[in-house]
Image (tube, rainbow, N blue to C red; front, side, top):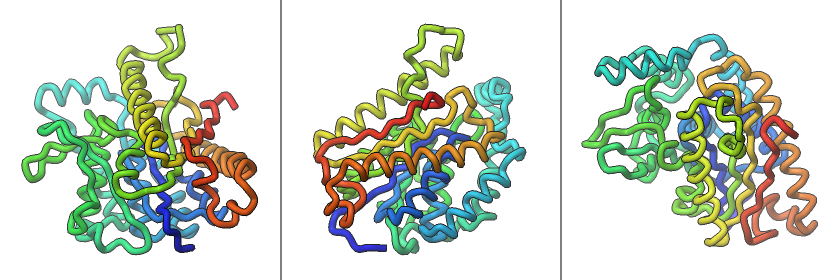
Length: 310
């Protein structure tokens, strides 16, 4: 991996089953010789980032991560009966099976409880959770003694499937509630250029056909898009270039539906390759030899491929 004075961060956003697209995008980046100094993830993005950070940011690790995703098809990680699960949660009887299933899968694939952030070699890792007690964004990885497994479980604790984590006076849930695309966290941790693997649906709340999505889905889309706009605006204000690549293969696929994993991986790979070609074609030839992304333009760069409409 080349040495850089300016840290390049891969920022992996949340999006449940759509996280498969990030696996394809990561393959495209590494095949192009683009390696991160830092990885920052929220929710499923935290799980993908942690897997690579722990096992090494290599094509071999991406291959194993790909197989993990393919093996997860049909396991019912996030059951589709979320209304019933929500009712159980409201009645104080949350379902435990999904929480246990996710934990067992992480441990089985190398994210052991004893592994700390300080033991990770070759790349910095930060994962994002939200604290319901303090209303703060929590960043795992700042303290090198923190458990990677705890950080990922906190970052992926999305009700009603996975119950929040209670630890040290904190009540932690999915980081997507405060920072679904943690660009600001990456900047705070020292990133000087960012490639964002974004699972947002930028068109989710703009349609006039209100029956297309349930009201709650539209509300969530609105909140996540507003978060994204603020984080990218902050990067632009601070002169941190961001290549924001939208990897939403089909926004109509629910976040709990893992049956489209193979197609999403292929879509992420193709979309990232297109973004790389487009961006490098615009950068000065001398600069491409130094770093594929970055100071060629001191502003936010958006390589957006329309969700399912390209």
